[in-house]
Length: 153
Image 1 (cartoon, one colour):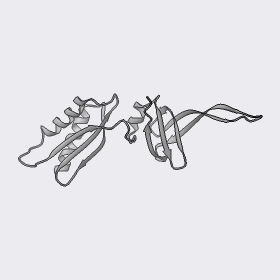
Image 2 (cartoon, one colour):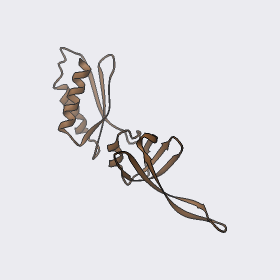
Image 3 (spheres, rainbow, N blue to C red):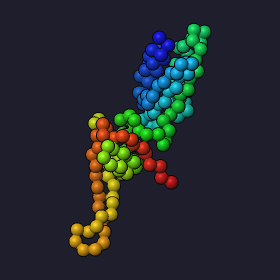
Image 4 (cartoon, one colour):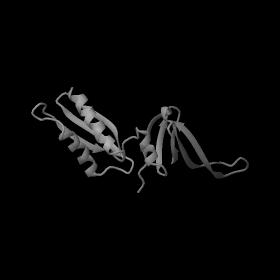
């Protein structure tokens, strides 16, 4: 009952804030609520406060003792939601699939797959030396084991 109430309150809060979306919700045995969110334009502290207060203001502490933690998905956390890919178009991703590891610039993210581009040095078809070649990959979400944004300084 408590878990269902929390889930329903969270869904209502996210309907109010269409720019935010859920990454994960967990409620452990001692009623610690842990919520991870992301947003199409990132997540501010005020966004986390909004989600937390929306839930807290509608739960009765007399009825159920709980703690709540709302946080944003970290910069180094793997991408798990299609909307995270969309917001990271033009950034470099490191993608591990069932068959290979690819690092490239995310050029598009559709409902079913992502598109990456990168440059690599390959031997010339004739003669000695190497030539820079532009590569592309179309990867279905179901084939992605893990994808992370590459942070460059």
